Picture (tube, rainbow, N blue to C red):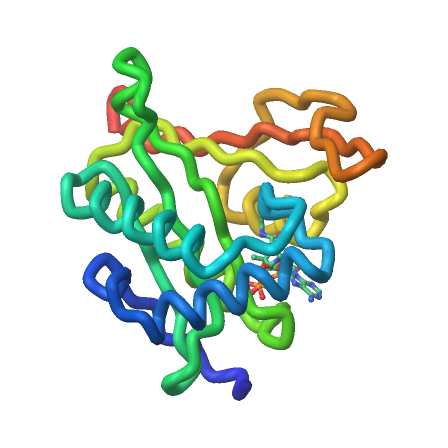
Length: 182
Ligand SMILES: CC(C)(COP(=O)(O)OP(=O)(O)OC[C@H]1O[C@@H](n2cnc3c(N)ncnc32)[C@H](O)[C@@H]1OP(=O)(O)O)[C@@H](O)C(=O)NCCC(=O)NCCS
């Protein structure tokens, strides 16, 4: 991939396109196979990814989510999304649930561009607090989120289970509420 900036697009209307779903599943499954901390232990199947993207797109249409993708030319190189919390008392807030960049495109600004776009979408939707969690050993992701303003509000020690291994779950938040007086 060239180091020119990726194109970051809203993918709400792409979610039913089988080529898009296949490309997304390939990225997610390859990353999980390589040990990425994306919440899956086994690589997600095509139907599972299709269901997930359909669910996120439906939420996005309702103003309860955002789905962003990054292309290098015509190749999908990354995706990410957030969803508004379902719990009635948490409705002003959303959780950035998955951010994934194809392994051969890491370190080229794709993850940063996707996260920045997702934050902008959250502001646009008047989300008050955007949360996310990351595995404690995911230093690239933690560095990225902190550099975009997320701060740690908690940590569950040895909480993430991958077979016999245990990792901390690091809880991060970005408060998007305008400060009083500003
Ligand atoms: C975490 C992830 C999304 C970052 O995406 P990316 O496109 O590689 O990240 P960027 O190129 O935008 O870089 C962002 C920061 O991460 C760091 N970084 C990311 N990948 C790196 C790499 N391969 N080598 C060195 N630094 C890297 C850099 O420090 C960079 O910070 P900088 O801009 O201050 O230099 C990507 O590595 C990924 O998909 N990982 C597997 C899935 C995952 O862990 N998702 C996050 C779950 S919480």
